Each structure stands twice: as structure tokens, then as C-alpha cells.
Length: 443
Image (cartoon, rainbow, N blue to C red; front, side, top):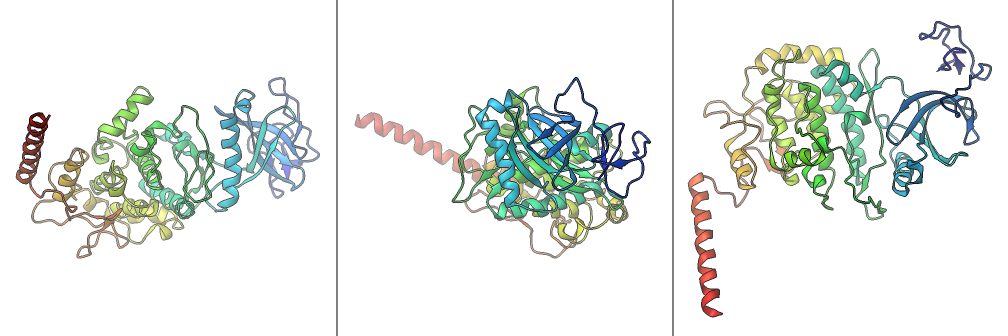
């Protein structure tokens, strides 16, 4: 490794100059590290092997440093808990779990957490691979929205990692733009998922992580079952969270808003978000109505009716933008190629109808939900709904299933017309009154 003697940044051996300071680089072991009055750790050796070079970021739980691994001769990101956080057993356990889960999930799109150790100053440190780029949160703060091709490529790479985690019965539970890191390359972003410290293990050997008086997860991206603290929470909570992230990426707004945590959770439990094509209609990147219907299924409050996996969600979003293929292909396709394919389809996609089928509206009403994202009746009698399968927007395919529910079939037991629904409700009320009368006469 080489280092800049001015700023302390570390670079590969084939680098010549620091692009930040313009200084010629020297061997990292020969570059002096200036001490700092603001942080006593700068220049110190932590955990007997990591030489702290500079502060990279500050967070609610800890501070992140760039450090030189004196054993492996490479740079690492060293995350050390704040002193007050290090006294909290739950926070330390989450920190430890992030390391343990990383060992279970070695994956190109999950950050590699390499070490967990106590520090000499009474805290705890995680050493992980050093990433070049920025969190999705910073990208959205700067750009507000990002192109569809970038969104599809990002969702596809996340799906590759999360579907594997879900197969192992591990649910992330805290997906948000802050935990998605974008490493920019010429072909497009290489995505890394961060912070598996909140993971829920649904396997038989699961360890219990007690959270005293808190609900894990960011409220803006939290599924209804997670907001209610239900133990039945599974991988479909991550589907909801990833859909909320995608919604924000294309519209510039989160799907459920509120002034504080409780008000946000109330929105999630009782309201439906507006269609993304309407919310983001004035953004610089067009949003086709075909995406609206994907979001309808991604935000089903009943998890059993929701899109069944993050891979299926990525496929549905890509198909809504007119792409052929699936997320396995799109994860490796360059952003430029994806963008060209989407651009070629956009004019016709903008004329499509993204409203739900009658079956969708009936089922939602039966389960106490609105007819879906503000949309009236469906595609009409002459135009079939778009297909969200792996083959793009083709017609003549069997209806796509989301979580086991077909788009154009009313679930068993759901009345197929409003009149029948009213009759069923009336009959129920009648027998309820008769029951009360019988109880009164008997007693």
C-alpha cells in the first residue's frame, strides 16, 4: 500500500499521486501519521494490528476510520463504537452479530466484515473491507432521483445477495439508503449491502437478540408486520423495504411520510402510497405507469399477497421498464446498455395502463385495504394487463404470481361483486343480532 503524507489516505501500490492533495505517494509504512487533537486514535495501533490513518465518517453508533492492516498490508474500514454505545449490551451484540453474519454470507454484494475485537480504550471495533464510493443516501441527497437503469442494476445486485441470505433464513430488517453502498465503476455501480447487525435469524438455531423497548428498522422503510413487532416477520419484510427504496429512487420521495416515527408507522398500517408515476411525474427521468402496478403488489399489507422475493421484485421492476431477461442478467449488464434498452421502450411504456385488475381491487377491499395506490378500475375490457415475468412485456403468458396470488384470480372466499359482499355482510349482521337475542332469553 501507498499513502499520502498530507492527508493520510491509502492507495494501491500502482498509484502515483493523491488526487485530493496532489502529493506524491510513498510507502504506507514510511508515511508519518500526524496526530490529531480532535481524535486521540489517529496514528494509534488499535487491536494490535490496525494503524488508524484518518476519520472517514461519524454515525449514531460509532466512528469509521481508514486504517492500515499491519498484518495483511491492506487498508480497512475500522468502525469503533462511541463510548456511551459501547456500554449498551444490545448495541454491542448487534455489532458482534454483524461480524458473525458476514462470516455466514460471503458474497460479492455484501460488505466483507473481517474482524471483531475489543479496543484498549474500552470500546469495540469492526474491521471490514474499505469501499470506494458513497452510500445511496448521499447520492439521493445530491441528485434527488437516479436513472431507471441505475435502479434496476442496483436492485438486481441486491437481489442476488439477499435471496441467498433469505435461503439461509436470515432477514436483514434494516434496509434503507444508508445501508446500501455504491462503488462507482465505468460499467455502473457495484452495490454492497451494509449492516447485518439487525438481522433476524428464522432458522432453527437462531439466537435471540433482545431489543429493549425498540423496533429494529427505519420507520420509512418498515413493513407493516415489522411495525407491529410480529414474530411472523420473514423475508417479505425485506421485499417491502427494498420496494420503498426503489420508490424513493425514482420519485424523490418516500412512499409513507410523517412528522415522527409513530405517524409514519400509522401511515404504513392504514394508508396506501400514491402511484409513483404521479408522484414523480415532474422529475427528470420519466416513470412509466407500468411501475405503479409493481408497487401495488410490493406494498401489500398482507405479506402472503406481497411479491414473494427480492428477486421477483427486481424482475418486476425491470419488466415494468420494458427490459427482457431477469435480474441475474441485469446485475452484470452495464448501466449504459440497460439505459439504451429502457429508452427504446419508454415512449410506448408511458402510454401503458398501470392500474390494477378487478380481482386486485376486490381482494384489497376484502382485506381492509384501499383499491390500491389511488387507482380506479383496471385495464378495461380490451387491453390485457402487462406481464411482469422474466420475458419482459410479452402477452399470452400465464398470469404472474406474487407470493402465490395470481393477478387475475379472486382468492377463494372473496366475494366477486360488491352486491355479494353487501349480502354477506348483511347476513353476518343478521345472525349476530339473533345470537345476542338468544343469549339474552337464555340467561
